[in-house]
Length: 289
Length: 336
Image (cartoon, rainbow over all chains, first blue to last red; front, side, top):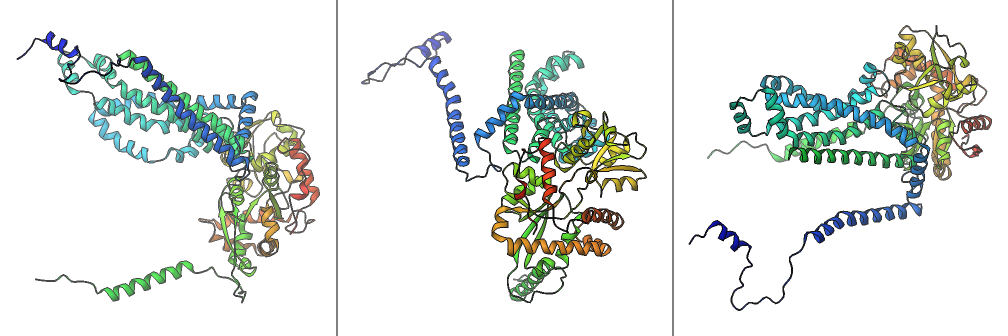
């Protein structure tokens, strides 16, 4: 009772006949794509916006009556004023620029180190056996513990913060990168080897493209963590520039609105970095497809 | 069928209960004290937030606890440590009764509407100083111009003290290069990373001398009247519990302070149990330098401060835009 392939296709696309006694009471056109995209877009905008408004109103209500002291939780208006003053005076821009330099520097340095290490862990057993115990131990030691030593070794300024940021970001990037290379289908690399692919073509034409999603995941993680690393470095090294340093100054001046405003800027910076990493991921997907 | 050997329950339970009781008693035993009050009135619980880490400079408090001065005053006092800004927040939240902080901290906090008040000033000299190597070309404060000064951060008493010294030398922070170095003043000056550092008269100069580095200091107390560290509390605590809490605490602490000044060697020994890993020789040296700052020029009674000093400090801090101008400093302190 087999039909040809084309006949099967035609049968699949033809509207199905209803069972006897059942009629179509109404005909409804199939939903088009445009309204579905609109509803999805609305879903990503309206609920979070509503939640934000509710949180803002709650914040205002709890601080307006004085039930929560201003030094513990400044009101949204005070925070907005501090934010505006900081933006218009250039205070946030100049300090954010220092934090951006430190975090990008730390991220790039970590990437330069993490990619070769992640690849080598998968490719060379001796290297993996030698290095993995130290990597595991290094992961367990909080980078912040090394901060005072970094100042002694590297002096003051942004260098110790960049290195601290590198240490914060490095291990997650190594792990993610090595997982990416580890999960490449061995049959593909074996086939390429049989076909005569040497190290460089194997790496650039097969391994890297296949590991690219994991590498981009490492980039996303690293870029977002780098902000944390830079801020921690500024806190611990008592930097005099950067958003972390600004928080310290505001804290010691009991200036809660400025502290909160600086945290808002930090959040925007982290979101901006995350946005960049997502953009890079989408770009890499386009390139590899 | 062989039955397994079982520990008899009742004797085992009694032994465990006795052991547990002994452990509880050991944990709850109090430090050696002097005379008892002889009264069954329960002690009022109080706590004070002291500086960053345990140190012999807090000996008056250690002595007051150890010698039972607080207990005799009807108080059960706990000593906590932390960063002054955090301690102020904890005091405002009711987690601490007092904080040990400087007059400049008090004015900055009050300028941000924190209702804190200084109830007793223990340091008569503001202990902040700028430290330079003995062979430095910096002979006067004006010579600091163009040089690099390392300090813990652009905030706090060291920053205010540095501004006071620059001001006394006719300079501003724009005339020097400021470098935040955390608490690495000793190594910074030792390595020559900076030309001068800001520190405390009872700390960094002594450390540097021990390393064989001769230094000279410019002490803030020689140039600008400033109110230094004292016992801070909230206005509500002062208003509601002055007689039964604040005054007894202050008086017991002053008693501890007088004991330390009269018996520094004994005070160092008492402090050993409060300061982990304390080096007795270094602590003795530090305590001797601290006593000088506690006593000052002897013109102001121990534990008190002068309105004129508060006013001078307020005017200076306002000129540096650290606090608003024309703050009413008369409400910032009381002499208990």
